[in-house]
Amino acid sequence: MESKNDELLEISNLETLDNYLSNMDNSKSNSYISKIPEVCKEYPCCLGIDEAGRGPVLGPMVYGISFCPVNEGSLLVELNCEDSKVLNEKKRDDIFVDICKHSNKIGWAVEVISPNKICNSMLGRSKYSLNQVSMDSAIGLIKAAINGGVKIEHIFVDTVGPADKYQAYLKNLFPKYKITVENKADSKYPIVSAASICAKVVRDHALQTWKCKEGHEYTFKEFGSGYPADPVTKKFLADNVDVVFGFPQLVRFSWSTASNILKDEAYHVEWEDIENEAPSPISNSTITSFFKMTNQKSEKPLNTFFSDRYLSRKVDL
Amino acid sequence: MAIHIQSGKNDIQTNPKFSNNIHSMPFKIHADCDAQISKYFLQTPIEKEILSASFRGHPLLGKEIQIPAGYRGVVLHETMKPATEKEDRKFYVIHTFDKFKYWNWEKAPSKNDPLVQAMDWIDIAEALHSPVVEE
Image (cartoon, rainbow over all chains, first blue to last red; front, top):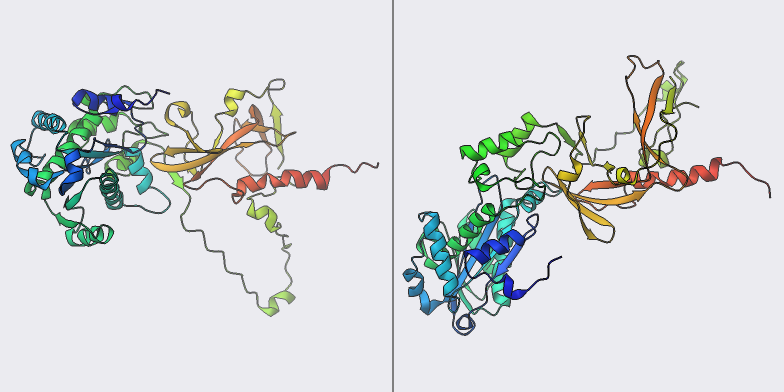
């Protein structure tokens, strides 16, 4: 095991980000929070939340938050924090580096939710939706900021599902703060744009540095963006099926794009029914049936000791 | 119908490497083939004796189960299944094992699992059927 050195783990540029991402256990969820700027502990702050990589069939979903004192709002505009989707990759990387450079004023945190974690939640015994995974992640990040001492005043969230419901839910959990949940908040509020850029940059770099635990040496070029419509991703999925195991853990099995390919290309797998089969009703025999002659020898059923343990007699002695 | 079990080669030894790769899974794969277990089936210990893993995105929890002393697990091979139920069936022992991993779908294996309970029968059978020795 490598020793965990806090100095080494600090993400201050793209190199240290790649280093962090390639050393994490990518079958689990991993969270990172930047150093909390002193000003964020002193002055009331705004905090933005957004996610990246919700739709893709490959790779992690990344939740991001960023925070800075309300009166430093102009800094975000100076850094050109805009909706991460309208910026190209290079521009996003540059802004991310700028955010890191202003670590005395802006703080940020991300949770990298691994594809394996996403499938495990969605394909577990009790169904746990992607929306629930998302909300838990957002709440976890807000709590991490609170625990770090950030003096939060106003939380801005890019919506997951219906905005009013989500807003009421968060308000209930965090009654002390002003909360704004809006559709397309990432293009309206620079602090959400900053969170969105952090999340998107981390997601992109997580894919670029992805190492399959199964030992496959796929590169980013071979699996593409991960969006189901990307022809590179489509080809990657079609070409890399294992007939028993399906795909490496890079792939989200719970996406129909992936499961449809397995339906055609891999062996069929039958899972136990979640509902326990209802015990068959006791057959009521009519009283006259006892007097009827039958040549069927009634078979003595095995004691429940055996049936409970799925033991049966295979050979007559 | 009788079933014959023959140990092909003279007394196959239990191969520890093989014992580590016997898994009882909570689903049925409609196939009979080789599987790249050590490559794809990644297992992590999570707490005392319990392992976690995933199969096609499904969360699994597993535990190692020892075959009781005096018994051995066997892997049988049947060259050809007879067409009718009446014919005798012939199996060959191709591997033996002394432990295996038992997996459940997002539920830690426990005494409530039929397979774990089935091991009880071995002790009871012993008590019921072993010859009475007068002391």
